[in-house]
Each structure stands twice: as structure tokens, then as C-alpha cells.
Length: 174
Image 1 (cartoon, rainbow, N blue to C red):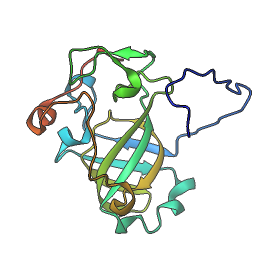
Image 2: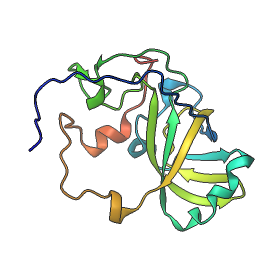
Image 3: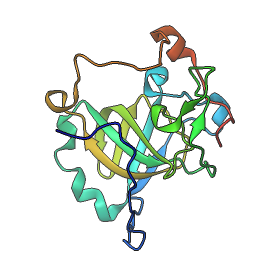
């Protein structure tokens, strides 16, 4: 049985080299934080492009068969790190790992977007919720058989679909 609940010390190997390089750029209609949707759910109909560097274009083979993809990226305009934040959909301070705030220790973002077309090294997407020029780290296909969770809990989030779809970003985090 796991010993859950006890605080344990973790020794990180700080000498372990971790090198992550962007593989492309995400383009969106959003040039400023104040007009950017906070999640793909609030970006319905918003089109964008993902331009993958030519060196990685061969990796896009067979991607067109998927309706949705995960985009993994860097919150490139965010320089701060906080462990407690007041998220967009709340007024209570929360631990950053219980939110999707960009002020995370590694500033890594994740979005599920609709894949409309693959053309060479460019992907046309819908539901883009990032700033124009966002560095892309990786792409993974969304596979309902693997990824869909039928019985899930949303923790502290109580916002309804209408509230989420109307919410826009602001400068509180970056």
C-alpha cells in the first residue's frame, strides 16, 4: 500500500541536463493578453496556424486523420513564477498546480484544439487560445479511447459553459 499523505523530501538531480527546444510556432489572432481566451472552450471558431520547423515536418505524417490535437507550448510572455494564484474563474487563492495559470515553475502550457488541415509543415487549427508567436514544444494526437475521462471531477471550478466561453485573459499573471 502507498504511504499517501505523509510529507516526504524529494532530492532533485539538478545536474541532470534537460534541454527542450521549440519545434515550431503557434500563430493566433491574439496579439495582447487582454483579448485572448483563457481556454480552448472560450476560443470556439478562433482560427490559428501551427508552423512546424522544416526539420520536424516529417513527423506530421498521418496526423491529418485526427480531429483534435494537443499543443504543448511555452508561456513565452510570462516571466513570473508563483505557487499560489487567484485564477481567472475564481476569487479564492489556489495552489498553482490546481489551476491552469501560466506562472508555473516551467511555464508550460497545454491546449486541445481542433485540427482542420495539414498542409506541408503548417497545421490549420480551431479553438486556439494562445498569444501569437507562442513557441511550440510538441504535438500529440487526442485519442478519445485513451484520453476521454467519462467520470471526472472539476475540483474547485464551478463556472458554467457560458461563463467560460465569455472569459478573456488579463495581465494578472504575466
